[in-house]
Length: 146
Length: 146
DNA sequence: CATCATGGTTGTTATATACAACAGTTGTAT
DNA sequence: ATACAACTGTTGTATATAACAACCATGATG
Image (tube, rainbow over all chains, first blue to last red; front, side, top):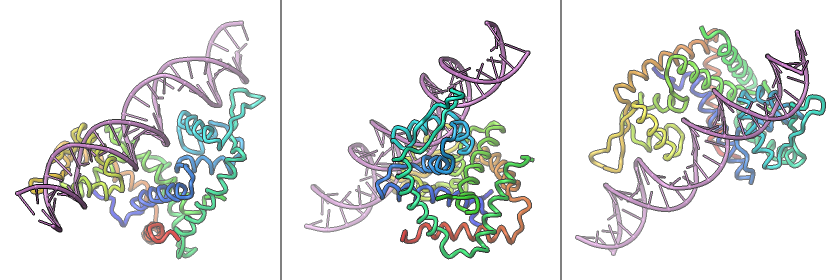
């Protein structure tokens, strides 16, 4: 048995960890105390303002309790706000605060810059094939486990 | 700002999480209580029996304290053993126990099967390009952060 | 209305992670 | 040889991540 270096699965994991770690380090170096998980949630909220907690859980592929705690932390940091839905008062809408949006912009610049570095020197053709292959692998995993 | 679905970085993270989760679920379904992190360490130890703690830390890209605790857990589960080096008594060598090796074989079959599923239907050419691209991205990240 | 379903939070537990401090061991330089 | 420095690994502590079970408040259905 081996997951050797000529299998994409190895590099997927390796790169995923390396990127997450590098991102957090650069955030930290710029004075931002934001984890990779928090960043992922902020990205989602940016794209979908006012998302409900359960919808956020789905998009982040996390348990709803995990999401509750994550939103707690982000709210404590002043980056997001919760608002009860007026129609259905069970529902909570989560939104970036103005302060959170401003911080998001700063973080996004850092992330964007890292992405540019990571992809530098890769031909559009290879990039397309790599993306498509990863997508295919993801689909394969979701499909029947047989 | 977006890390949209046409960027490989998005799929790298998505797939990494999905694979790790799927793997743990299949381990669990087969009666094995082994986390993804533990599996990564077992893989390394399988390939490098008697590895020292610090060398293991390096290979796993983890802090040495993290490694100590990880080895603690694996030892508690009876999967690995520690042995002091006779020459340099600071050094600890870590090895799969017979029981750990047996369990490893069972886990490897499950992992291998999942890998086969994930890669099914992907042409060798695409696979090679994807692997090479991911490797390139990893190198880019390690290079100068400029 | 009574019951059931839904959305979210809390209690609890376990893992993962790493910084700081430490203990024991080895190497080195006077 | 002895003192000091460097190294290996562990422990103390703190925090984040994650999810199961149980729960509360609210809404939907008969």
